[in-house]
Amino acid sequence: MEKSPFHHHYHHHHLHHAQRLLLRYPLPKFVLLSLLLVVALFFFFHFSPLSSPAPSGDRRSLRSAAWGGSLWEKRVRSSARVKAGRRGASVLVTGAAGFVGSHVAAALKRRGDGVLGLDNFNDYYEPSLKRARQALLERAGVFVVEGDINDGALLRKLFDVVPFTHVLHLAAQAGVRYAMRNPSSYVHSNVAGLVSVLEAAKSASPHPAVVWASSSSVYGLNTKVPFSESDRTDRPASLYAATKKAGEEIAHVYNHIYGLSITGLRFFTVYGPWGRPDMAYFFFTRDILRGKAISIFEGPNHATVARDFTYIDDIVSGCLGALDTAEKSTGTGGKKRGPAQLRVFNLGNTSPVPVSDLVAILEKLLKKKADRKVVKMPRNGDVQFTHANISLAQRELGYHPTTDLQTGLKRFVKWYLDYYSSGGKKSSYSL
Ligand SMILES: NC(=O)c1ccc[n+]([C@@H]2O[C@H](COP(=O)([O-])OP(=O)(O)OC[C@H]3O[C@@H](n4cnc5c(N)ncnc54)[C@H](O)[C@@H]3O)[C@@H](O)[C@H]2O)c1
Image 1 (cartoon, rainbow, N blue to C red):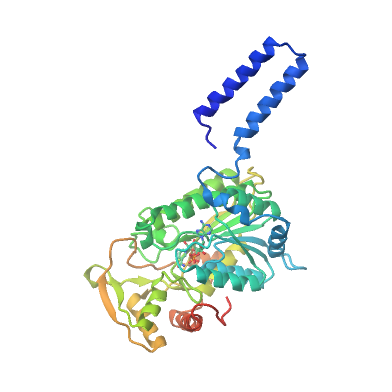
Image 2 (cartoon, rainbow, N blue to C red):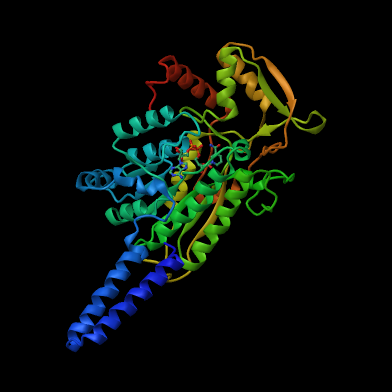
């Protein structure tokens, strides 16, 4: 907490006043000293940052009365507990009510690892979908704590209650075009939020290993394909991409200073059941079914726009591979003992598909023609194509994507029809 000049003035004025009084009416020396001590202690606790539960101005943290208490701690502990008789990991998954987070959390729990989720359930897209994913996770024994990654007190509490071995940090403000409407949400979640998570990780004893989601968007305006991890990443085309790139640099700092083991995963257009409604394959499906026109972007000179679509199950296996090969952090409680692992991987599918092909597949699966409108791609964040070189992840993580777009979209459409036929209330689909 910032002390105002007024506080300083007040502080000194009162001390001087006390001293004057004491000089006029002499008291035994030890009474005088203990009086001064009491005054000093009062000012220390009254104005010290320790007495303030949250950074000033952060109302989210002040609302955090929702967490705490022995019952809550019991739920946290039991969710994060490794299945009896196993040597698994205990993982804090941020963004656990999100698309990727819910799938990975479920997969971790299935194989016996301890999992605790954290998500703020923001309304960037329909929160009911996040709640539905949460309900499935609850049934699988995963508790998703409702809170913001910027709430340092909450994070400290979680690390106090559970000695997490890993953090899978997926909470972020996603989407490239929304950044022009709400830029500060990207700074809040992807920059400040990442720092808050890394601060909590480096203060924990022992330090957990951190795996987090970067993005293929860091390749920005690059034209050399496929994109390799060693390619330049200094020409982002959106604020979203810039915050992910900033995240990679921030990861370097925490690895360098504190010995945190950190792995960044550059996901390439992830899709599948329980997906994100703000993504093209998702809203194309909705609009085709409603008979609404869809805009298909094209580049300059009618160049096709293509994406390296990656199926969610493949991304899940990549995340598990990254967690399983993450070395321990080398520090504890903010101290570094030696150099630690710092990695970054592409997680893609190595086969870019033109967006027009995506629409053709959807038309076949939905048995309905799309009302296509081809429009010039606006220069507001999207890049013309993405294509991953995944040989590094193949070698180091054993990452081998197996689902082509046709197969993956078939599963997505089945889920979509099932979920929305119940009015988005329930689904017979698991995660
Ligand atoms: N889906 C993709 O194609 C893709 C591609 C590249 C990178 N990524 C990255 O992967 C991660 C997961 O993406 P997703 O597709 O599952 O997105 P998502 O929006 O479905 O999931 C993110 C979750 O984080 C939560 N969240 C956001 N800000 C938060 C905050 N400040 N505190 C607590 N929770 C917060 C949201 O409520 C949401 O449930 C993100 O970091 C995203 O940037 C995704």
